[in-house]
Length: 418
Ligand code: UD1
Image (cartoon, rainbow, N blue to C red; front, side, top):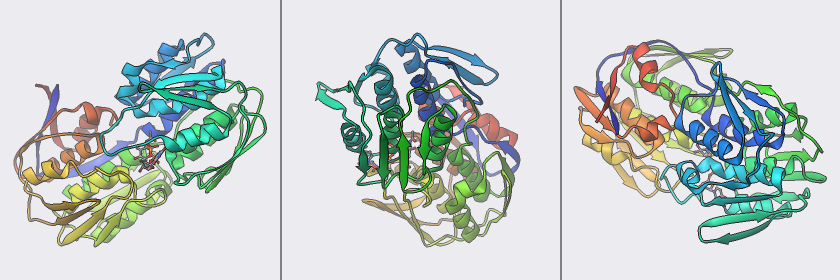
C-alpha cells in the first residue's frame, strides 16, 4: 500500500497540462475491437483504470503496443468474447465491452462490474437497450451472457440519461441493421468524443451532445488514429485546489465549455477566472465565500465527479454550503475523513451541510474512492500541519502523476510505501 504525506499551507502557482479524459479513453478502448484494423489512441493517461482496460483487451486476444504515450490496439487476432471476472471487479467500465464485443463476436460474457463504492450502480438501462437491439440476455451466477445472431436497429428511450448505457448502446448499434435512435441520451462531452471517434472509423452517428442520438448501422469500420478530449474532472480538481489554497494556476488543454458549471461556482466563491481557447486561468486569494447550494446533475449540470473536491473547498469557505448529490447514493463517505481534519459537515441522505471553519488541521485519513480521495488531498493542501492520506490505489485509478503535477505547482506532497 502507498500513502501521501502532505505539508499544507502553501499556495499553488503555475501551469498544468491536463491528461486525456479517463471517461473518454475507456469507451474508446472498448470501441477499438469494433474493427480488426489497428487503432492508435494518442496520449493515453497513466492511470490504473486504463491499464486494467488494456489488460481486458489483451485477455480477448488483442495485441497492445505502447508508443509515444499512446497505445496501438490490434484486435485482428481477438478470439475471446469472455471478459475475465478478476478484471471486471477492478473496473466498472468493463461493462462497455458488452456492446462492442457483441458487435464483434455476436456474443459476450461478463461478470457483474465493479468500480468505486459510491452507490448501487445498477446496469438495468444497459441491458434494456441491448435487449431492444435484439440481444438475448441470460443472467446467472453473477455472470451476464449475451447472444445476438443479428443486431437490429431500434428506438430506445432511456428512463434516465445514463452515460454508460448511452455509450454501450452506441457501441452495439454502430454495425446493427438499420437505424437506432436513443432518446433521453446522456449529453456528456465524452459521448461527443465517442461519436467523433466512431465516425472517423466510418460509423454514422449523429446528435451526441443533445438528448437524441441517431446511429445508422454500417457494414464495416476501419482503423484510426485519435487524440481523446482532455479530462474535465482532472482540470476541475486542479482549479478547485488553486481556488481553495490560493494562487494562480492555468490548466492547459481543456476547453472551458466542458466545465462551465464549476467555473460559475468558483466565480461565485470569489475567484477570478479567465478562459481563452483551451486554457483556463484561475486566481484566488484563498479566502472564499461560500455558495448557498451545489446540486449535482447530468451534464451540463455540476458534475458528480467534482462533488467531493468542491465539498473539500467549501470546508474553509466563509458561510454554509449545502451540497446535494443526485446521482450516486453513498457518495459522501469521504466526509467522515474530512471531519477528522476539523471540517464541520452534517450528512443526511443525499445532502451534506458544510459549515465553513477557519482552518483544517493535518490528520491521518484514508481514501475510500477515487474522487473522495482527491478531496482529501485538496483538504490536506489547505490544512495546517502534516496530513497522511492512506491507500492511494483509488486515486491512481483516475489521476496520472497526481503528486508530480501538484509538486510542479508548488505543493509539498510525497508518496511513500507503507
Ligand atoms: C459515468 C462516469 C462516472 C460519472 C457518471 C455520472 C465513466 C467511465 N464513468 O459513470 O465517472 O460519475 O458517469 O456522470 O464514464 N443508472 C441506473 N441504471 C443503469 C445505469 C445507471 O439506474 O443501467 C443510474 C446510476 O445508478 C446513477 C445514474 O444512473 O444513479 C448515473 O449513472 P451513469 O450515468 O450510468 O454513470 P456511469 O456510466 O456509471
